[in-house]
Image 1 (cartoon, helix red, strand yellow):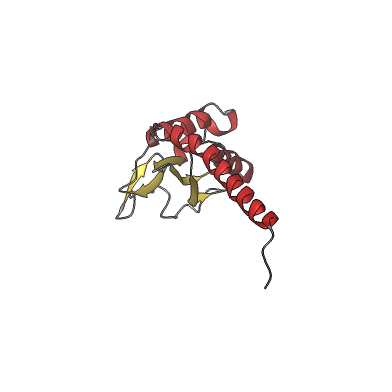
Image 2 (cartoon, helix red, strand yellow):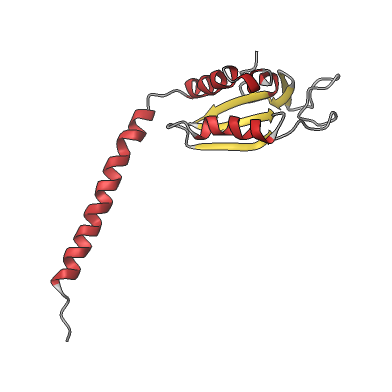
Length: 143
């Protein structure tokens, strides 16, 4: 019968000690985010957009909604470069856990798109928010 080497036990213990060290070092970051409100994350992103010369004029069609530290963008930008810049603002924030861009486009949608605020207003289940239509339950941060 083979006996297991003590080196194997030592390596196993070292591995679990390493994992415990990594897990312990990550906790302070998450605990620092506990006191950060969703509204603060949204306002910080909007402020970054306002302070960016190429994006400030597009603020009427970019809405930022944050729930449980998950950022959701609605609307569009004028170019892929601007799109990447806006998404990068959220992605680069420490406390943001996820960025949802399902309703955010790199270029303006067609004039008859349900996402655009039309002459007749927004479709049922959505509300006007700047130049766009967002779900009724979402918060509008566009003045």
